Image 1 (cartoon, helix red, strand yellow):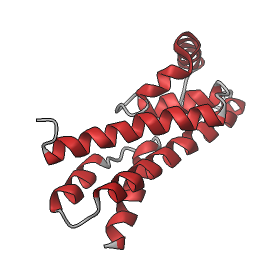
Image 2 (image 1 turned 30 degrees about the horizontal axis):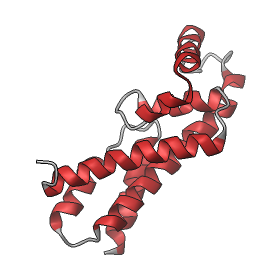
Image 3 (image 1 turned 60 degrees about the vertical axis):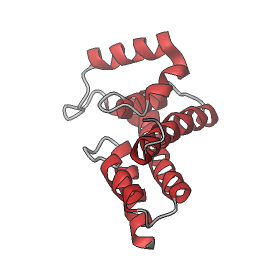
Image 4 (image 1 turned 30 degrees about the vertical axis):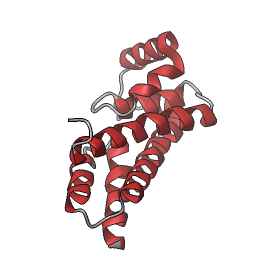
Length: 144
């Protein structure tokens, strides 16, 4: 049983980084099996996902020093565009950190923009925890 929680943690952690991983299918499968404690699954998935986002935030804090390097994956134009959007919508844009495609880069940009860690963790935990909570409710038929 412990292996399932451990696997879920690492799937959720990896999915929150810029790696192309998913944790939702694993969570749904574990919930649907009925063999695991629901609140434990939600806590493990949320913790893993938030810690993965924290890695992005931390990388964002130091990434700009590499911007002049040829291998740097983000053009100065795209970086300026991301900064502009973050300045416009501010820390509340982190409520979208759960979304596929834009959520992970958003947490990286929050690091670039020097978002305070406590506020970052609070908003990202709420967003990602709510996403997993809704997914659990849908899986169990509580919303339908």
